[in-house]
Image (cartoon, rainbow, N blue to C red):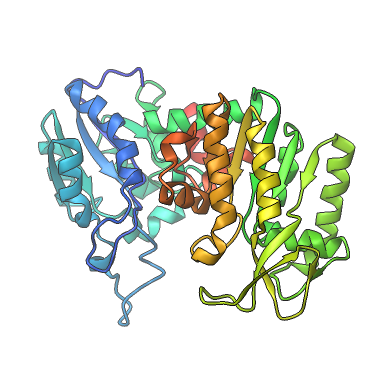
Length: 400
């Protein structure tokens, strides 16, 4: 951020889509904490800050009478927490456009912050409406995009708004800069050997990512339920494990491409299985390609975890996207824990380790290992699409 913010109003798109409990208390403020350096930098320069964000999907979860549930989705719940984190005066506007927003933005003094109401209270936000974006743009002098988690969406406040600022009046925030820099480093100039670890439930969600990994990975480790589609493709028995039978051809084609590229693909040798998808399921370990009827693979087994960890610890670059099992259930969390600890161990030895994707980030935070890996991305879908090599509209709007 090389722009001068003194006496300027910075309109910042942040990602404050944070989890709240039933009493509307923040249960994980990672996204807020990550935005603080950008906000403080502008305030310390003598500028003021206008914050835009969404929270949840209010237009998909209306009240019974068809009205927006403002109590559940209002950003007002965040004001006190923001004041504590920023140590600054934080005002709140009960809409992101309209008279009150305009009046409060105009009255904002250097060193002060104005938090606008949820941008997704307006259907124009997700529609990328130009008129709506123009109203948002009119509130500030400089546009700053620091919301990597929404960079893959061409919404009004994430992308379209940027067109109302010239190249000298729009920029990335520190968080966006770090996200782009670290993901680019992992993909373009990685230290060898490179190990890419992927998990999650569906091959269809990750096949593009897996194919992109073939360009720069030495090892690809596949865990999670998606592994069972590969075992099914290789004529294995997977019991009641979650599979995508229509993706068997994709799985076989990927394995063929990996062999041709000289990339080693590791599937879990064994699996921790349950007799049902539940925390209190009976548990047994089976070879991953010999799971009997009535059982489903819900985590990688101890032998698989050991071999995965060994490969990770020998790597110089590790990219991890997706858990190894149903880590929310204690009986099926061990594989994800082992991978997380192996990433921390590799980092300690000098490897560059990057964790991206909502569930793997949740796991690394839960295990209190976030500071023991090189970089934890705040973007789930955005990081996935960036690693797949897609052009993200929120980034393009600033760089164009």
